[in-house]
Image 1 (cartoon, one colour):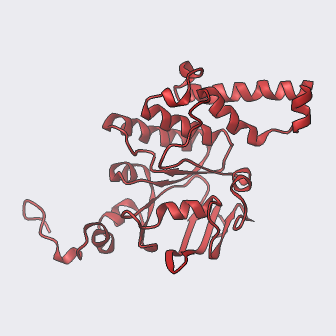
Image 2 (tube, one colour):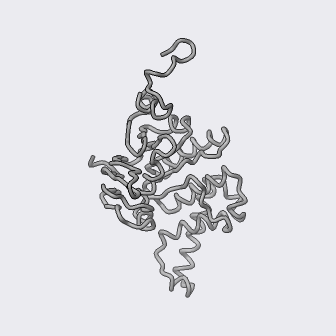
Image 3 (tube, helix red, strand yellow):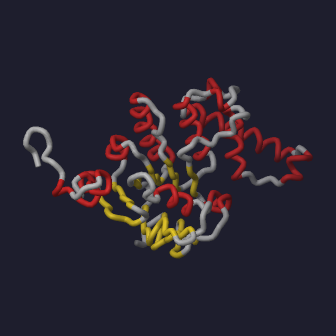
Length: 267
């Protein structure tokens, strides 16, 4: 598809004799909000690791805005415009909330190390701009009043929001969210849904979401891809995915035709 921003063509990944992902293909157009789901061990996080350069595909290609990313190191992929969060939060716990975001802003600095050491006027101005941008992001994510606190001291839900803010500070075009609702209570999950929509709308981002909470996925995503044992078994709208017999079998472990009827006599 010529209008694809992120184009993933038949990527595979093997670890020795284990095939973790097999010919995974995906298209994300600008502004898309899509989901990637599957049972535990289906290969979802491996796909994210392939997209962000943690792993190199055994086969296939990955392109962002026409630029081939396959084989690039993670920081180069981030510079190209793809950022991610992690299933297990990876904040800099000993740094302040503000500095966690400031660090990410430095991905786009124009001044070199020597300029920073010499404290040139341009370097000082750039640092001020970075601090203001970081504070602006914290304000959007309702974290500005905690900017001086250590990141590890934040409540769990706030740590999740800080990780998303830090990812956005790299100025990505594509944002990958790896189970952002993990560990959240019901109210935090409601707030997360609104935050994902707001991030997509206000920052003009394209979003790919891994999530086990089906309520979050079905409510947020316009299209969903389903993996099982590293193989894509379905792709489509939430309504189509919910009724797909292969998806039901992958999650429940039995063919849909073998499942008992729903309560109330439904089939």
